[in-house]
Image (tube, rainbow, N blue to C red; front, side):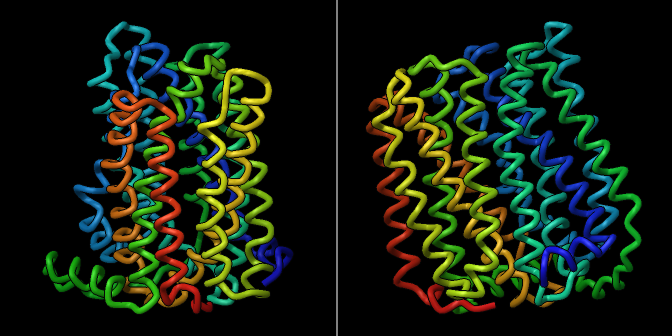
Length: 405
């Protein structure tokens, strides 16, 4: 259950390494995509929100189907194939930019293809971990993954901001393409034996229904899922507003924009480091509740930010606390979900949760951008913060507070 024991498990270390490499590139792309949309192609807050929604639209359209297909197949080949395919897709962006063919609709189409591949990768990724480590180590294993994810969330945008400043947004995508290539090659070295998939009913609708029922009839997963959907909706509103707010309204450059996420990464690493011990000390449920309350506490700072040094410090503080909350909560939440779900339902459980969560981004991001354009940045941010407070109240009053691994 300790970090040392996990570090001695060669298969987990390889899995962790591949995850770290690909995540580093992913967060470079996250910033590069926003910079290309706003600075290169002149996207407004509404259009930036729509572009963000395009990335997650496949989760809304195909998410439940992806869960069934993952449960029907071995998960490692899916992880390898989707990594290599994502490398090829992202390499198209600099090619199109250099030839002058890159437009917002074409960028959105590429982002949708990338999102589709990520959908299948994510469902397989979250479902593969319980095959690598025993149940008692799931929280600690998820904490290790969350630490690197948080570090990537911080350092990736920082590196992305520097790359965008040095070589331009389109060329920065080459870095991410390379990381997915490396990740796929590392995963290809795994030798974890996977059991034969449970014989499929070949009843797609019935298999989807089994996955949805498992979540929304479970006494803890149901309120957890509903509150998480609301959290994603409101956070997506803030995400769509934040890019234009920082780069356009406050006029900070892409590098400083990346610095705010780097500070957030520090918070995420700290939160993930405390997640396992906090879960064992206080229980998984109370730790989840703490993370949900810290999210609105963080973003309440954003409307007060200005283009001064003090305003920049507020942006950094908001990201620090927000990503600390994610780092603290995510490992215990994921460990709990994985521990209570049978292996043959892991793909559907993860894909259903993730798909409905990402579907909230499809709706929340455009709404955030629209409200910002119509009502002003500050008003839109206050509406999103109010929604985050509401989900925190709801989850506090639910059975999630009693959750234990």
